[in-house]
Amino acid sequence: MIKIIKNFLEENEIKVLNDWSLNNYHKSFFTDPGMDINYPRTRLTTRIHGNLVYKGPENDKEKVEYPQEAFNIQKRIIETLRLKNALFPNQFRHGIVTGIGFEFGSISLHQDPIYLPNTYTVHCNFLTQKPIDGGITIINGKQYDINVGDALIYTVSHLQHEVTQVVGKIPRILWCYGFCVTDEDMKNIFSYQNIVSKNT
Ligand SMILES: [Fe+2]
Image 1 (spheres, rainbow, N blue to C red):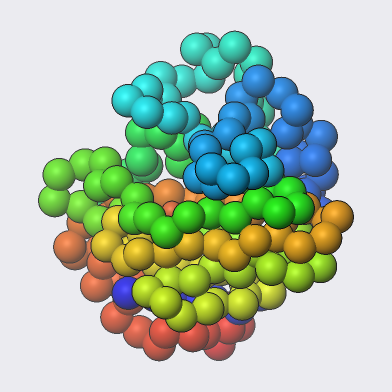
Image 2 (cartoon, rainbow, N blue to C red):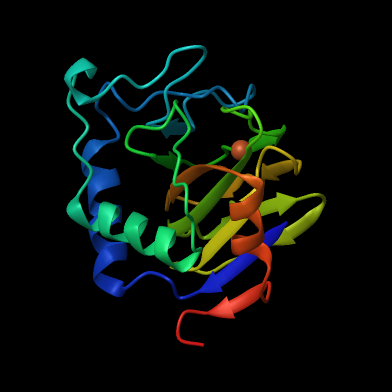
């Protein structure tokens, strides 16, 4: 199940998110998820790896303080998708992961975990900075070449996905909002048009 909402983000939100990623990716809470064995450290994310779970900001070595805009967007997603239960994956700080992908980096084919029993893991992804070329998401073999600010929402626990190699010196910046979605909420998210614009 895949849904795109065009132009979900405002211009100023895109700028704030990009600035935050560019100003913070060298900090210890950005780590390499190791999803490109040929080009290590071409992608860094704020996701927590392995069996570790997010225990709250007091446990962060360097405190992750996402900008207020990131939370405004999260609230808007929950409202727009009509989520009754907004449960976050336990590897996501505050339900949010941001990643930065540098030249040559790609993300190999995978599915994401189911974090809570009887839920689907759904990501609402935003590209906030697009590389010169590449860095395109492929879901079940089909390319989704979204624009900056569009929401690409899909069931990452059930659909195979990958990202093509980033080409050029402009890094790919992605903001990912994760949800553990119940059956009931799945209907709310995916029951209407697959591609919509924010204002329709
Ligand atoms: Fe994934």
